[in-house]
Length: 360
Image (cartoon, rainbow, N blue to C red; front, side):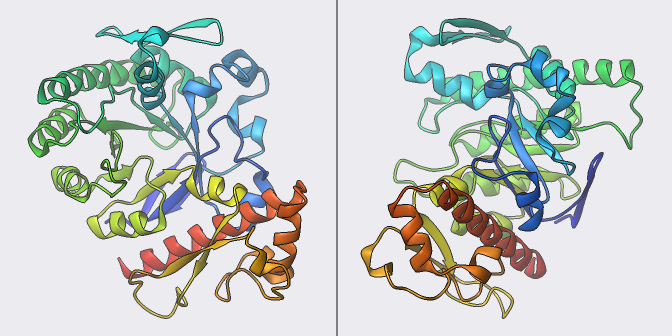
């Protein structure tokens, strides 16, 4: 496993968890809050950003870093998973073909190609640009998965061609250009995952990602598929477990050799009243499940709880506020609650990554 990942806006210590600021914001917190709890990088999403606030607005506001006040590394997802999800929900929403995707959202029609995805991400000032991929469901047939692999590889080649063209046009040297990451598809077939990885390695990228939904129908992590992808990628390349954010699954991913993770789960859980608490000191030794538990802040048993959410937490919330006070804020629906809860869960994730990194 690599220990660092050098990017235009700084060096990441690995492994790293990236909160998703999908629409240009990590909900309920600002850039300074993220600094405070030790977040190294955030991930945003082209599919949402191209709709709101819109690409011309992002450029007018100086790119994503300046617009959001975030000075550290920033990843942008290609939007492939979101396009797939939109069309899978209702085929009338759009189509996916070899040229790219066409879809309609809120009355607006979008034509989305591999080249367009790269153009947008480069214009946003991303540190890590992710290739557009053709996502599938893990239970789709082998024929569907094989077609997805063929299209994903073809799109990745087009993404790289456009990336190389724009890098030359902008006169970006090796130290100042973003990194380009390709996504490995193949559903639940280890053979197709290997085929996809091999073909992407022939094209050549700076890093690789596990593509597709990472869970089975019961919500369990697809460890066999994650292992197959990690085994297919040489150790010198960083591999990103896209969309993985459950603490147990992140720990499993690190054990498999993954260095990067992102998800909306910790911040969404925080806003909805599910806080994370270590059951052991994460600095004391190896983490074995169950190393954490959920604290449901709305439970009435917490009304008079005069202690922090977690005795092992280093966040400013646990340093200054009781669980009983968080319960009160949640019950009265005060806007302070989501900020404090988000800070807590994000600091938990940063402590988790520090602990896993020291033992990898």
